Length: 106
Ligand SMILES: [Cu+2]
Image (cartoon, rainbow, N blue to C red; front, side, top):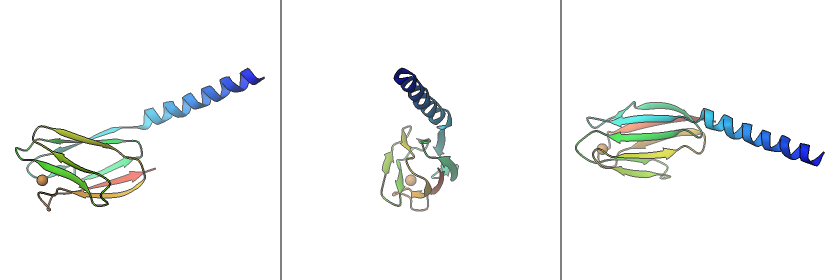
């Protein structure tokens, strides 16, 4: 009886882990000509955003709520895994007209 419970719990844990893995996506954002592309992203909790800087100058991806702030040099990348649902507005500290938005669903 006890062994059966342990097996059932292990299978349940594995299936939760599996479905989380299956759902998580990596979303690529290219920085090119002083702009994020795409500007607007729809994502889910657990997804990872990867910025790739194709420009010849450095940029940042700076969350307005200050929870992250990445400086991204030319030909470099930065990434963040989204931990909670909500609306994220971010920008580049060097070019205040560079703005991006991430809509994070649960
Ligand atoms: Cu910039």
